Image (cartoon, rainbow, N blue to C red):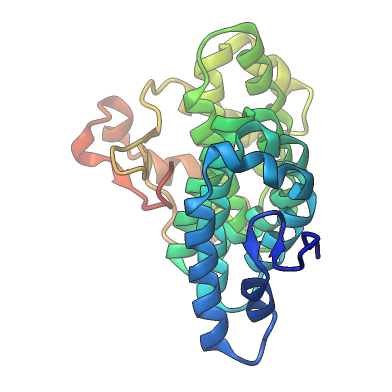
Length: 295
């Protein structure tokens, strides 16, 4: 914990009482009031005052990180919103600390509360816009090793959102190509829904770097022959998932409805693409899967 010399402020701008109250684990009302006050204090921080915070950035990020994983729903949700507001203020000064906070943000992608996931994705998109995709993608990749299937699925959807924002250019094509090994491993996931979203992410990658390159990269990976056939089938369909006006991701395939079908199935694509949908993918037949709102 870092205090100013007068002992009244922490991190250069936060009244000490707020931090003290947030540490009073047994008093939920006091903590709820304190987190709301902290949100106001961060919101009121002017960009011209950021210099006061800079020396304390590592300590402040550690503090917010603890709040992100707090078991109290209100504390955790508000902490995500606070972090989003805070990075608006400090901009790319947060870049050296992104790796420190990414594990907590990735965990929140699998939270049981939709409001938490919604806010989390919004912050991740904002972070990507501020520091660039590479540091965020690097942190997201670790999420593919999580036991929580929803976390893995939402990480893949974050990849899709990031890929959809990439424009043509050597640097962006390199970043898209770098994801292929990760997506190829996801094709072997025990959950059919995760496998299908991985196929969708590869379809977007295919649209960026082209058939020859994506297939060349897949040749280097351990991809089963039935998965390659599914990918070849998917690549013939030009329609791609997209981010709707409300920030949700709309898929052009029918994703498995639940976490069932745990064994790999050669007819994942048959379930995803009914014959008519393959021939004429139309907006009326698209299956919208609600995901957290992006920033």
